Length: 569
Image (cartoon, rainbow, N blue to C red; front, side, top):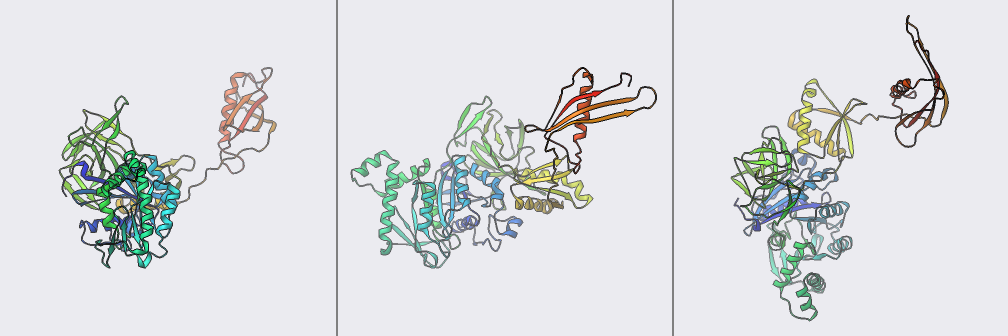
Protein backbone atom coordinates (compact mmCIF):
# COMPACT_ATOMS: atom_id res chain seq x y z
CA UNK A 1 0.00 0.00 0.00
CA UNK A 2 1.24 3.46 -0.93
CA UNK A 3 2.16 6.14 1.60
CA UNK A 4 -0.23 9.11 1.74
CA UNK A 5 -0.06 12.68 2.99
CA UNK A 6 -2.51 13.61 5.74
CA UNK A 7 -4.82 15.53 3.38
CA UNK A 8 -5.28 12.30 1.38
CA UNK A 9 -6.24 10.19 4.41
CA UNK A 10 -9.73 9.65 5.84
CA UNK A 11 -10.22 7.94 9.23
CA UNK A 12 -13.85 6.79 9.35
CA UNK A 13 -15.32 5.01 12.37
CA UNK A 14 -18.36 2.76 11.80
CA UNK A 15 -20.90 2.64 14.66
CA UNK A 16 -24.45 1.42 15.14
CA UNK A 17 -26.87 -0.64 17.14
CA UNK A 18 -26.04 -4.34 17.02
CA UNK A 19 -26.56 -6.10 13.66
CA UNK A 20 -27.15 -2.92 11.62
CA UNK A 21 -24.51 -4.01 9.09
CA UNK A 22 -21.20 -2.30 9.92
CA UNK A 23 -19.09 -5.37 9.18
CA UNK A 24 -21.00 -6.05 5.93
CA UNK A 25 -20.50 -2.43 4.87
CA UNK A 26 -16.78 -2.66 5.62
CA UNK A 27 -16.61 -5.82 3.50
CA UNK A 28 -18.55 -4.19 0.65
CA UNK A 29 -16.26 -1.14 0.57
CA UNK A 30 -13.12 -3.33 0.61
CA UNK A 31 -14.53 -5.41 -2.26
CA UNK A 32 -15.62 -2.38 -4.27
CA UNK A 33 -12.15 -0.81 -3.97
CA UNK A 34 -10.62 -4.16 -5.09
CA UNK A 35 -8.73 -4.42 -1.80
CA UNK A 36 -10.16 -7.93 -1.53
CA UNK A 37 -11.26 -10.11 -4.44
CA UNK A 38 -14.09 -11.93 -2.72
CA UNK A 39 -17.12 -10.60 -0.88
CA UNK A 40 -17.29 -12.31 2.51
CA UNK A 41 -20.42 -12.83 4.62
CA UNK A 42 -20.92 -12.43 8.37
CA UNK A 43 -23.08 -15.57 8.44
CA UNK A 44 -20.24 -17.63 6.96
CA UNK A 45 -17.55 -16.09 9.17
CA UNK A 46 -15.58 -15.01 6.09
CA UNK A 47 -15.44 -11.22 6.52
CA UNK A 48 -12.16 -9.34 6.79
CA UNK A 49 -12.91 -7.41 9.96
CA UNK A 50 -14.60 -10.21 11.96
CA UNK A 51 -11.69 -12.65 11.93
CA UNK A 52 -11.42 -13.54 15.61
CA UNK A 53 -12.69 -17.11 16.36
CA UNK A 54 -15.13 -15.73 18.95
CA UNK A 55 -16.59 -13.37 16.33
CA UNK A 56 -16.87 -16.15 13.74
CA UNK A 57 -18.56 -18.39 16.31
CA UNK A 58 -21.16 -15.82 17.39
CA UNK A 59 -21.62 -13.90 14.14
CA UNK A 60 -21.11 -10.50 15.82
CA UNK A 61 -18.25 -8.01 16.18
CA UNK A 62 -16.52 -8.28 19.55
CA UNK A 63 -13.42 -6.14 19.06
CA UNK A 64 -12.60 -3.17 16.85
CA UNK A 65 -10.95 -3.85 13.50
CA UNK A 66 -8.96 -1.63 11.15
CA UNK A 67 -9.54 -2.04 7.40
CA UNK A 68 -7.58 0.38 5.16
CA UNK A 69 -8.41 0.72 1.47
CA UNK A 70 -7.46 3.00 -1.43
CA UNK A 71 -9.99 4.92 -3.49
CA UNK A 72 -9.32 7.75 -5.95
CA UNK A 73 -5.78 8.40 -4.68
CA UNK A 74 -7.05 8.55 -1.10
CA UNK A 75 -6.41 6.15 1.75
CA UNK A 76 -9.51 5.40 3.80
CA UNK A 77 -9.01 3.75 7.20
CA UNK A 78 -12.27 2.07 8.15
CA UNK A 79 -12.55 1.33 11.87
CA UNK A 80 -15.30 -1.23 12.48
CA UNK A 81 -16.55 -0.97 16.09
CA UNK A 82 -18.80 -3.51 17.86
CA UNK A 83 -22.48 -2.65 18.17
CA UNK A 84 -23.33 -4.45 21.42
CA UNK A 85 -23.20 -2.59 24.75
CA UNK A 86 -21.02 -5.31 26.34
CA UNK A 87 -18.13 -4.14 24.14
CA UNK A 88 -18.49 -0.40 24.68
CA UNK A 89 -14.79 -0.11 25.55
CA UNK A 90 -13.88 -0.92 21.93
CA UNK A 91 -16.37 1.71 20.75
CA UNK A 92 -14.69 4.35 22.96
CA UNK A 93 -11.28 3.51 21.49
CA UNK A 94 -12.49 3.82 17.90
CA UNK A 95 -14.44 7.01 18.64
CA UNK A 96 -11.30 8.59 20.10
CA UNK A 97 -9.26 7.63 17.02
CA UNK A 98 -11.51 8.42 14.04
CA UNK A 99 -12.10 11.85 12.48
CA UNK A 100 -15.76 11.24 11.64
CA UNK A 101 -18.33 8.80 13.02
CA UNK A 102 -20.39 7.09 10.31
CA UNK A 103 -23.46 5.79 12.18
CA UNK A 104 -25.49 3.08 10.48
CA UNK A 105 -29.25 2.71 10.82
CA UNK A 106 -31.30 -0.36 9.92
CA UNK A 107 -33.92 0.86 7.39
CA UNK A 108 -36.51 -1.48 8.89
CA UNK A 109 -35.83 -0.55 12.54
CA UNK A 110 -35.01 3.17 12.41
CA UNK A 111 -33.32 4.88 15.36
CA UNK A 112 -32.49 2.28 18.04
CA UNK A 113 -30.91 2.46 21.49
CA UNK A 114 -27.43 1.71 20.11
CA UNK A 115 -27.88 4.47 17.51
CA UNK A 116 -28.49 7.03 20.22
CA UNK A 117 -25.59 5.69 22.30
CA UNK A 118 -23.24 6.04 19.33
CA UNK A 119 -24.45 9.61 18.77
CA UNK A 120 -23.90 10.42 22.45
CA UNK A 121 -20.42 8.87 22.41
CA UNK A 122 -19.54 11.09 19.44
CA UNK A 123 -20.85 14.10 21.36
CA UNK A 124 -18.66 13.30 24.36
CA UNK A 125 -15.43 13.55 22.32
CA UNK A 126 -16.63 16.25 19.89
CA UNK A 127 -16.67 13.97 16.86
CA UNK A 128 -18.58 15.01 13.72
CA UNK A 129 -21.11 12.53 12.29
CA UNK A 130 -22.71 11.11 9.16
CA UNK A 131 -25.57 8.60 8.81
CA UNK A 132 -25.97 5.62 6.45
CA UNK A 133 -29.42 4.02 6.17
CA UNK A 134 -28.54 0.39 5.49
CA UNK A 135 -30.55 -2.71 4.49
CA UNK A 136 -32.78 -0.88 2.01
CA UNK A 137 -33.38 -4.24 0.31
CA UNK A 138 -34.82 -5.88 3.44
CA UNK A 139 -38.45 -6.46 4.28
CA UNK A 140 -40.20 -3.45 5.89
CA UNK A 141 -37.37 -1.10 4.83
CA UNK A 142 -38.65 2.49 4.96
CA UNK A 143 -36.19 5.31 4.23
CA UNK A 144 -38.65 8.15 4.80
CA UNK A 145 -39.65 6.86 8.24
CA UNK A 146 -36.02 6.24 9.25
CA UNK A 147 -34.87 9.64 7.98
CA UNK A 148 -37.71 11.46 9.76
CA UNK A 149 -36.99 9.57 12.99
CA UNK A 150 -33.29 10.54 12.76
CA UNK A 151 -34.17 14.17 12.10
CA UNK A 152 -36.63 14.20 14.99
CA UNK A 153 -34.13 12.55 17.37
CA UNK A 154 -30.92 14.30 16.34
CA UNK A 155 -32.16 17.65 15.04
CA UNK A 156 -32.46 19.60 11.81
CA UNK A 157 -28.73 19.28 11.08
CA UNK A 158 -29.56 15.84 9.62
CA UNK A 159 -29.82 16.39 5.83
CA UNK A 160 -30.46 14.03 2.87
CA UNK A 161 -27.54 13.66 0.43
CA UNK A 162 -28.26 10.30 -1.23
CA UNK A 163 -31.77 8.81 -1.04
CA UNK A 164 -32.97 5.44 -2.33
CA UNK A 165 -35.14 4.60 -5.33
CA UNK A 166 -37.64 2.01 -4.15
CA UNK A 167 -37.39 -0.26 -1.12
CA UNK A 168 -37.35 -3.94 -0.18
CA UNK A 169 -37.33 -6.05 -3.38
CA UNK A 170 -37.91 -2.90 -5.43
CA UNK A 171 -34.76 -1.15 -4.17
CA UNK A 172 -32.99 -0.46 -7.44
CA UNK A 173 -30.94 2.73 -7.11
CA UNK A 174 -30.04 5.95 -5.31
CA UNK A 175 -30.40 9.63 -6.12
CA UNK A 176 -27.74 12.30 -5.63
CA UNK A 177 -30.09 14.95 -4.24
CA UNK A 178 -27.78 17.91 -4.83
CA UNK A 179 -26.80 16.99 -8.42
CA UNK A 180 -30.29 15.67 -9.33
CA UNK A 181 -28.76 12.46 -10.68
CA UNK A 182 -30.02 8.91 -10.31
CA UNK A 183 -27.86 5.78 -10.27
CA UNK A 184 -29.62 2.50 -11.10
CA UNK A 185 -28.13 -0.84 -10.06
CA UNK A 186 -28.11 -4.14 -11.85
CA UNK A 187 -28.35 -7.58 -10.29
CA UNK A 188 -24.59 -7.90 -9.67
CA UNK A 189 -22.63 -7.04 -6.54
CA UNK A 190 -19.91 -4.96 -8.18
CA UNK A 191 -21.32 -1.75 -6.68
CA UNK A 192 -21.49 0.01 -10.03
CA UNK A 193 -24.57 1.98 -11.06
CA UNK A 194 -25.78 3.39 -14.35
CA UNK A 195 -26.39 7.13 -14.37
CA UNK A 196 -29.98 7.93 -15.24
CA UNK A 197 -32.72 10.50 -14.95
CA UNK A 198 -34.67 10.63 -11.72
CA UNK A 199 -37.82 8.45 -12.01
CA UNK A 200 -40.88 10.64 -12.53
CA UNK A 201 -42.80 9.09 -9.63
CA UNK A 202 -40.30 10.47 -7.08
CA UNK A 203 -39.17 13.65 -8.82
CA UNK A 204 -41.44 15.90 -6.70
CA UNK A 205 -40.20 14.25 -3.50
CA UNK A 206 -36.56 14.73 -4.60
CA UNK A 207 -37.17 18.43 -5.28
CA UNK A 208 -38.59 18.86 -1.77
CA UNK A 209 -35.59 17.10 -0.26
CA UNK A 210 -33.21 19.17 -2.40
CA UNK A 211 -34.85 22.39 -1.23
CA UNK A 212 -34.42 21.20 2.37
CA UNK A 213 -30.75 20.36 1.74
CA UNK A 214 -29.98 23.65 -0.05
CA UNK A 215 -31.60 25.69 2.73
CA UNK A 216 -29.56 23.82 5.36
CA UNK A 217 -26.32 24.44 3.43
CA UNK A 218 -27.06 28.13 2.96
CA UNK A 219 -27.99 28.61 6.62
CA UNK A 220 -24.39 27.76 7.54
CA UNK A 221 -22.78 30.10 4.99
CA UNK A 222 -23.53 33.83 5.17
CA UNK A 223 -22.55 34.53 1.55
CA UNK A 224 -24.68 31.68 0.21
CA UNK A 225 -27.57 32.74 2.43
CA UNK A 226 -27.60 36.28 1.00
CA UNK A 227 -27.51 34.94 -2.54
CA UNK A 228 -30.23 32.43 -1.77
CA UNK A 229 -32.52 35.10 -0.29
CA UNK A 230 -31.97 37.28 -3.36
CA UNK A 231 -32.90 34.33 -5.63
CA UNK A 232 -29.46 34.39 -7.19
CA UNK A 233 -28.41 31.18 -8.91
CA UNK A 234 -25.99 29.00 -6.92
CA UNK A 235 -24.32 26.24 -8.90
CA UNK A 236 -23.94 22.68 -7.66
CA UNK A 237 -20.18 22.93 -7.08
CA UNK A 238 -20.66 25.87 -4.71
CA UNK A 239 -23.38 24.00 -2.84
CA UNK A 240 -21.16 20.93 -2.61
CA UNK A 241 -18.37 23.07 -1.14
CA UNK A 242 -20.89 24.46 1.37
CA UNK A 243 -21.93 20.91 2.23
CA UNK A 244 -18.27 19.92 2.76
CA UNK A 245 -17.73 22.90 5.07
CA UNK A 246 -20.92 22.17 7.02
CA UNK A 247 -19.90 18.54 7.55
CA UNK A 248 -16.40 19.54 8.68
CA UNK A 249 -17.78 21.87 11.34
CA UNK A 250 -20.45 19.40 12.46
CA UNK A 251 -23.28 21.77 11.51
CA UNK A 252 -24.55 19.30 8.89
CA UNK A 253 -24.99 15.54 9.27
CA UNK A 254 -25.27 13.98 5.79
CA UNK A 255 -27.50 10.96 5.24
CA UNK A 256 -26.70 8.23 2.70
CA UNK A 257 -28.64 5.12 1.77
CA UNK A 258 -27.92 1.69 0.36
CA UNK A 259 -27.52 -1.99 1.05
CA UNK A 260 -24.18 -3.38 2.19
CA UNK A 261 -24.93 -7.03 1.41
CA UNK A 262 -25.86 -6.27 -2.22
CA UNK A 263 -23.12 -3.61 -2.49
CA UNK A 264 -25.61 -0.99 -3.67
CA UNK A 265 -25.08 2.66 -2.74
CA UNK A 266 -21.55 1.92 -1.57
CA UNK A 267 -19.74 3.55 -4.51
CA UNK A 268 -21.61 6.78 -3.84
CA UNK A 269 -20.62 6.53 -0.17
CA UNK A 270 -16.94 6.00 -1.05
CA UNK A 271 -16.98 9.00 -3.38
CA UNK A 272 -18.60 11.10 -0.65
CA UNK A 273 -15.96 9.98 1.89
CA UNK A 274 -13.26 11.27 -0.47
CA UNK A 275 -15.09 14.45 -1.52
CA UNK A 276 -16.93 15.51 1.64
CA UNK A 277 -15.42 13.85 4.73
CA UNK A 278 -12.61 15.74 6.51
CA UNK A 279 -8.92 14.81 6.40
CA UNK A 280 -6.96 14.61 9.68
CA UNK A 281 -6.63 18.07 11.22
CA UNK A 282 -4.85 19.68 14.17
CA UNK A 283 -5.25 18.19 17.63
CA UNK A 284 -4.51 19.42 21.15
CA UNK A 285 -1.99 17.97 23.57
CA UNK A 286 -0.51 19.05 26.90
CA UNK A 287 3.17 19.62 27.53
CA UNK A 288 5.05 18.94 30.76
CA UNK A 289 3.80 22.16 32.38
CA UNK A 290 0.17 21.31 31.61
CA UNK A 291 -0.14 23.99 28.93
CA UNK A 292 -2.22 23.20 25.84
CA UNK A 293 -0.26 22.77 22.64
CA UNK A 294 -1.62 22.38 19.10
CA UNK A 295 -0.20 19.57 16.98
CA UNK A 296 -0.54 19.67 13.21
CA UNK A 297 -0.53 16.48 11.07
CA UNK A 298 2.93 17.34 9.75
CA UNK A 299 5.08 14.30 8.89
CA UNK A 300 8.19 16.36 9.66
CA UNK A 301 6.99 17.56 13.05
CA UNK A 302 7.83 16.03 16.47
CA UNK A 303 6.43 12.54 16.90
CA UNK A 304 3.15 12.16 18.78
CA UNK A 305 0.94 9.05 18.59
CA UNK A 306 -1.87 7.53 20.65
CA UNK A 307 -2.21 3.79 21.34
CA UNK A 308 -5.95 3.05 21.00
CA UNK A 309 -6.04 -0.74 21.06
CA UNK A 310 -3.91 -3.62 22.34
CA UNK A 311 -4.06 -7.25 21.23
CA UNK A 312 -2.40 -9.97 23.33
CA UNK A 313 -0.96 -12.74 21.19
CA UNK A 314 0.66 -15.83 22.74
CA UNK A 315 3.21 -16.05 19.89
CA UNK A 316 3.85 -12.47 18.72
CA UNK A 317 3.38 -10.91 22.15
CA UNK A 318 1.57 -7.62 22.58
CA UNK A 319 0.44 -5.88 19.38
CA UNK A 320 -0.33 -2.17 19.89
CA UNK A 321 -2.52 -0.25 17.41
CA UNK A 322 -1.75 3.47 17.23
CA UNK A 323 -2.65 6.60 15.31
CA UNK A 324 0.03 9.18 14.53
CA UNK A 325 -1.09 12.78 15.13
CA UNK A 326 2.23 14.48 14.39
CA UNK A 327 5.56 13.44 12.92
CA UNK A 328 6.42 10.01 11.54
CA UNK A 329 6.72 6.71 13.41
CA UNK A 330 9.63 4.71 11.97
CA UNK A 331 10.62 1.07 12.35
CA UNK A 332 13.67 0.22 14.48
CA UNK A 333 13.74 3.52 16.34
CA UNK A 334 12.78 4.69 19.84
CA UNK A 335 9.78 6.57 21.24
CA UNK A 336 8.97 7.94 24.68
CA UNK A 337 6.00 6.79 26.78
CA UNK A 338 4.72 10.15 28.07
CA UNK A 339 2.61 8.65 30.88
CA UNK A 340 5.19 6.29 32.37
CA UNK A 341 8.30 8.33 31.50
CA UNK A 342 9.87 5.32 29.85
CA UNK A 343 11.66 4.96 26.53
CA UNK A 344 10.31 2.24 24.24
CA UNK A 345 12.07 0.52 21.40
CA UNK A 346 9.96 0.57 18.24
CA UNK A 347 10.45 -2.62 16.22
CA UNK A 348 8.83 -3.54 12.92
CA UNK A 349 5.78 -1.43 12.03
CA UNK A 350 2.69 -2.83 10.33
CA UNK A 351 -0.41 -1.68 8.53
CA UNK A 352 -3.22 -3.93 9.74
CA UNK A 353 -6.24 -5.10 7.72
CA UNK A 354 -8.28 -7.50 9.84
CA UNK A 355 -5.83 -10.25 10.79
CA UNK A 356 -3.44 -9.38 7.93
CA UNK A 357 -0.28 -7.51 8.91
CA UNK A 358 1.58 -5.62 6.18
CA UNK A 359 5.15 -4.67 7.13
CA UNK A 360 6.04 -1.02 6.44
CA UNK A 361 9.02 1.20 7.14
CA UNK A 362 7.08 4.11 8.63
CA UNK A 363 3.62 5.43 9.48
CA UNK A 364 3.10 9.14 8.83
CA UNK A 365 0.94 11.79 10.49
CA UNK A 366 -2.79 11.12 10.16
CA UNK A 367 -2.35 7.40 9.50
CA UNK A 368 -2.94 4.28 11.58
CA UNK A 369 -0.49 1.44 12.17
CA UNK A 370 0.60 -1.22 14.66
CA UNK A 371 3.78 -2.31 16.41
CA UNK A 372 4.60 -5.47 18.35
CA UNK A 373 6.27 -6.10 21.69
CA UNK A 374 6.09 -2.71 23.39
CA UNK A 375 7.17 -3.27 26.99
CA UNK A 376 5.03 -0.96 29.09
CA UNK A 377 2.73 1.13 26.86
CA UNK A 378 -0.95 0.56 27.62
CA UNK A 379 -4.10 1.44 25.69
CA UNK A 380 -4.81 5.17 25.85
CA UNK A 381 -1.19 6.23 26.38
CA UNK A 382 0.92 8.60 24.30
CA UNK A 383 4.13 7.84 22.42
CA UNK A 384 6.17 10.92 21.57
CA UNK A 385 9.60 12.36 20.91
CA UNK A 386 11.69 12.53 24.10
CA UNK A 387 12.87 16.02 23.17
CA UNK A 388 9.27 17.23 22.90
CA UNK A 389 7.21 15.40 25.52
CA UNK A 390 3.44 15.95 25.17
CA UNK A 391 0.40 13.99 26.34
CA UNK A 392 -2.75 13.45 24.30
CA UNK A 393 -6.16 13.09 25.90
CA UNK A 394 -6.62 9.40 26.65
CA UNK A 395 -9.65 7.15 26.34
CA UNK A 396 -12.42 7.28 28.97
CA UNK A 397 -13.39 3.63 29.41
CA UNK A 398 -16.70 2.70 31.08
CA UNK A 399 -16.77 1.09 34.53
CA UNK A 400 -17.68 -2.61 34.93
CA UNK A 401 -21.27 -3.57 35.69
CA UNK A 402 -21.12 -7.38 36.06
CA UNK A 403 -18.86 -9.69 38.07
CA UNK A 404 -18.22 -13.42 38.09
CA UNK A 405 -16.18 -15.54 40.50
CA UNK A 406 -13.54 -17.64 38.70
CA UNK A 407 -11.86 -20.82 39.89
CA UNK A 408 -9.07 -22.66 38.01
CA UNK A 409 -10.03 -26.14 36.89
CA UNK A 410 -6.65 -27.76 37.60
CA UNK A 411 -3.43 -27.10 39.49
CA UNK A 412 -1.77 -26.26 36.17
CA UNK A 413 -4.47 -23.66 35.47
CA UNK A 414 -3.91 -22.17 38.92
CA UNK A 415 -0.20 -21.68 38.24
CA UNK A 416 -0.85 -19.90 34.91
CA UNK A 417 -4.04 -18.00 35.74
CA UNK A 418 -2.44 -14.87 37.22
CA UNK A 419 -0.20 -14.05 34.24
CA UNK A 420 -2.90 -15.01 31.70
CA UNK A 421 -5.46 -12.70 33.29
CA UNK A 422 -2.92 -9.85 33.29
CA UNK A 423 -2.41 -10.37 29.54
CA UNK A 424 -6.18 -10.33 29.11
CA UNK A 425 -6.46 -7.03 31.02
CA UNK A 426 -3.80 -5.47 28.79
CA UNK A 427 -5.95 -6.33 25.80
CA UNK A 428 -9.24 -5.14 27.29
CA UNK A 429 -9.06 -2.24 29.80
CA UNK A 430 -12.79 -2.57 30.55
CA UNK A 431 -12.16 -5.92 32.26
CA UNK A 432 -11.14 -5.71 35.93
CA UNK A 433 -9.91 -8.31 38.42
CA UNK A 434 -9.79 -8.23 42.21
CA UNK A 435 -9.54 -10.56 45.15
CA UNK A 436 -12.43 -10.35 47.60
CA UNK A 437 -10.81 -10.54 51.03
CA UNK A 438 -14.04 -11.51 52.76
CA UNK A 439 -15.04 -14.40 50.48
CA UNK A 440 -11.51 -15.26 49.23
CA UNK A 441 -12.83 -15.34 45.66
CA UNK A 442 -11.16 -14.04 42.50
CA UNK A 443 -13.68 -11.77 40.77
CA UNK A 444 -13.50 -10.82 37.08
CA UNK A 445 -15.70 -7.82 36.25
CA UNK A 446 -16.82 -6.48 32.88
CA UNK A 447 -19.61 -4.63 31.11
CA UNK A 448 -21.91 -7.63 30.96
CA UNK A 449 -22.14 -11.40 31.26
CA UNK A 450 -21.23 -11.96 27.59
CA UNK A 451 -18.25 -9.63 27.93
CA UNK A 452 -16.80 -11.58 30.86
CA UNK A 453 -17.59 -14.98 29.35
CA UNK A 454 -15.99 -14.15 25.99
CA UNK A 455 -12.93 -12.73 27.75
CA UNK A 456 -12.44 -15.96 29.71
CA UNK A 457 -12.98 -18.08 26.59
CA UNK A 458 -10.34 -16.00 24.84
CA UNK A 459 -7.97 -16.61 27.77
CA UNK A 460 -8.52 -20.37 27.42
CA UNK A 461 -7.94 -20.29 23.66
CA UNK A 462 -4.88 -18.03 23.67
CA UNK A 463 -3.12 -19.01 26.87
CA UNK A 464 -4.49 -22.46 27.66
CA UNK A 465 -5.95 -21.44 31.04
CA UNK A 466 -9.35 -22.96 31.79
CA UNK A 467 -11.52 -21.63 34.58
CA UNK A 468 -14.98 -22.27 35.95
CA UNK A 469 -17.30 -19.37 36.68
CA UNK A 470 -20.08 -18.91 39.18
CA UNK A 471 -21.99 -16.10 40.76
CA UNK A 472 -19.92 -14.30 43.42
CA UNK A 473 -20.68 -15.10 47.03
CA UNK A 474 -22.58 -12.21 48.52
CA UNK A 475 -20.76 -10.62 51.45
CA UNK A 476 -23.82 -9.94 53.60
CA UNK A 477 -23.90 -7.63 56.61
CA UNK A 478 -25.84 -7.86 59.86
CA UNK A 479 -27.15 -5.01 61.97
CA UNK A 480 -29.65 -4.34 64.73
CA UNK A 481 -33.09 -2.90 64.14
CA UNK A 482 -33.82 -1.30 67.55
CA UNK A 483 -31.89 0.20 70.50
CA UNK A 484 -30.84 -2.01 73.40
CA UNK A 485 -29.95 -0.51 76.80
CA UNK A 486 -27.71 -1.81 79.56
CA UNK A 487 -26.20 -4.92 77.97
CA UNK A 488 -23.97 -6.39 80.69
CA UNK A 489 -20.90 -8.58 80.30
CA UNK A 490 -18.43 -9.70 82.95
CA UNK A 491 -15.08 -11.36 82.26
CA UNK A 492 -13.20 -13.16 85.05
CA UNK A 493 -10.16 -15.40 84.74
CA UNK A 494 -7.95 -16.34 87.67
CA UNK A 495 -4.68 -18.16 86.94
CA UNK A 496 -2.66 -17.45 90.08
CA UNK A 497 -1.02 -14.12 90.69
CA UNK A 498 -2.58 -11.26 88.75
CA UNK A 499 -5.89 -12.41 87.21
CA UNK A 500 -8.09 -10.93 84.53
CA UNK A 501 -11.25 -9.01 85.30
CA UNK A 502 -13.47 -6.75 83.23
CA UNK A 503 -17.09 -5.69 83.69
CA UNK A 504 -19.00 -3.42 81.26
CA UNK A 505 -22.50 -2.11 80.58
CA UNK A 506 -23.12 -1.15 76.93
CA UNK A 507 -25.94 0.63 75.08
CA UNK A 508 -26.40 -0.48 71.44
CA UNK A 509 -28.41 1.40 68.82
CA UNK A 510 -28.75 1.52 64.99
CA UNK A 511 -26.53 4.05 63.23
CA UNK A 512 -28.01 5.95 60.29
CA UNK A 513 -24.83 7.46 58.86
CA UNK A 514 -21.55 5.59 58.92
CA UNK A 515 -20.54 2.02 59.67
CA UNK A 516 -19.54 2.00 63.36
CA UNK A 517 -19.24 4.47 66.17
CA UNK A 518 -17.95 4.00 69.74
CA UNK A 519 -18.67 6.49 72.50
CA UNK A 520 -18.63 6.50 76.34
CA UNK A 521 -20.75 8.07 79.04
CA UNK A 522 -18.94 6.76 82.12
CA UNK A 523 -19.52 8.75 85.33
CA UNK A 524 -17.37 8.74 88.46
CA UNK A 525 -14.43 6.80 87.09
CA UNK A 526 -16.05 3.38 87.55
CA UNK A 527 -14.12 2.37 84.44
CA UNK A 528 -10.68 4.02 84.21
CA UNK A 529 -10.16 6.05 81.03
CA UNK A 530 -7.12 3.94 80.15
CA UNK A 531 -9.41 0.95 79.55
CA UNK A 532 -11.67 2.70 77.01
CA UNK A 533 -9.50 1.70 73.99
CA UNK A 534 -9.48 -1.92 75.18
CA UNK A 535 -13.29 -1.95 75.39
CA UNK A 536 -13.57 -0.47 71.91
CA UNK A 537 -11.11 -3.04 70.57
CA UNK A 538 -13.18 -5.85 72.05
CA UNK A 539 -16.34 -4.48 70.45
CA UNK A 540 -14.64 -4.17 67.06
CA UNK A 541 -13.44 -7.78 67.26
CA UNK A 542 -16.97 -8.90 68.05
CA UNK A 543 -18.29 -7.03 64.99
CA UNK A 544 -16.44 -9.40 62.65
CA UNK A 545 -18.93 -12.20 63.27
CA UNK A 546 -22.62 -11.51 63.84
CA UNK A 547 -25.00 -13.81 65.71
CA UNK A 548 -27.55 -14.34 62.90
CA UNK A 549 -25.41 -15.97 60.21
CA UNK A 550 -21.85 -15.11 61.14
CA UNK A 551 -21.58 -12.08 58.80
CA UNK A 552 -19.90 -8.81 59.89
CA UNK A 553 -22.07 -6.36 61.85
CA UNK A 554 -22.36 -2.79 60.57
CA UNK A 555 -24.29 0.45 61.12
CA UNK A 556 -23.99 0.24 64.89
CA UNK A 557 -23.33 2.76 67.67
CA UNK A 558 -21.99 1.33 70.94
CA UNK A 559 -21.88 3.45 74.11
CA UNK A 560 -19.97 2.39 77.26
CA UNK A 561 -22.10 3.55 80.21
CA UNK A 562 -20.90 1.69 83.31
CA UNK A 563 -18.70 -1.09 84.60
CA UNK A 564 -16.23 -2.13 87.28
CA UNK A 565 -12.61 -3.25 87.65
CA UNK A 566 -10.15 -4.75 90.13
CA UNK A 567 -7.07 -2.74 90.85
CA UNK A 568 -4.89 -5.86 91.21
CA UNK A 569 -6.16 -7.70 88.10
